[in-house]
Length: 245
Length: 187
Image 1 (tube, rainbow over the protein chains, first blue to last red):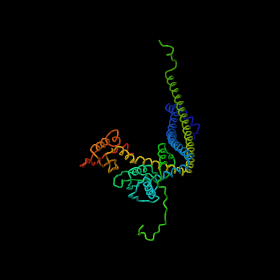
Image 2 (cartoon, helix red, strand yellow; image 1 turned 120 degrees about the horizontal axis):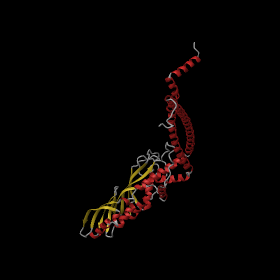
Image 3 (cartoon, chains in turn cyan, green; image 1 turned 30 degrees about the horizontal axis):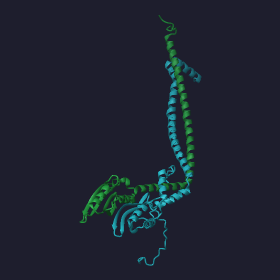
Image 4 (cartoon, rainbow over the protein chains, first blue to last red; image 1 turned 135 degrees about the horizontal axis):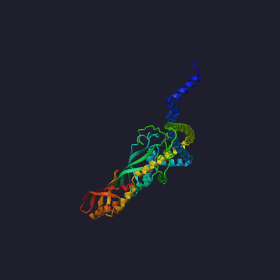
């Protein structure tokens, strides 16, 4: 049986005598390298570069999120909570979270009294008056109001309605003169806005008042709160609920 | 006559073999260089990827820290949101509501001595209806002229139209006028 040394020497001799074999031998290294390089590029470099781009994109997005979170946390740290609560309390009187019909009626009555006009009638169909309404944005409480009085007082009523802390909007009116003075029938509205909730996106910027918004808010600081009377809740137990008042 | 450079003592076959050997040598060096570059690229790709992964971990950890801080300030965040929402609503209500006290003042300033109003109405679409009496045709025409005068009523009203007019034996008139409140003065 021939040994390994013999086979090797025969192989070398064959390589020397066969020019094709010699060619393959001299081009073998570059070919192997090309194959290795191709494998490296296709199966290692290319997927890794794709990973790099993906991770880089994620890192960029995370950095943006981090920056907005840092801004938000710094804003939150500088919030004056007690001043915020006092501002909310004022804004709450202008546009309460619920319809707050009793305060609306009291406010209109006091507004009329302060203006020197008499309320002839007030009609409203507020619907749900619960404290926890299902509304999600601003809702409008429409009512019809009829007041009478002297012209100056009626004009005063219109003026005061614009500076009442509970915000009203008079959409239209009809002013009729009569021997006793003037009667004005009007369609008006008050508003309520449900409190928003914290959204799922924690990176959402902290809402801040812009300068025009701050100016708008400052305006209502000078408004008159006609609804500030408190309503006494008497015990609801009457012997004959159908008897006269 | 051949120059010195053209004189080659080596046989042609040897020259060709020498060239071939030189090409093979260059090819081998070039392929090894490519292999080295590729290996360097592999190392660089892994290193860069590793750096990015480490950076991502750091950023994620910072995000988690900031989120914890923000969660501790939930009541401040909610209060800010409520205030913003209320103020936006207040601003939109301010934009919505007309200033009818001002409209009354404007109308009042346009009425001459001999004219008195009996009715005044403003509809939701800002159509103004005015009814009243005038002592004379001159008083009525004064009123109409002041309504359409660009320096007076023309600033507030447009499309002034005399809808009804009736006179009596004493020379007095009853009238009804409709007009549009100009947008700029509605608030």
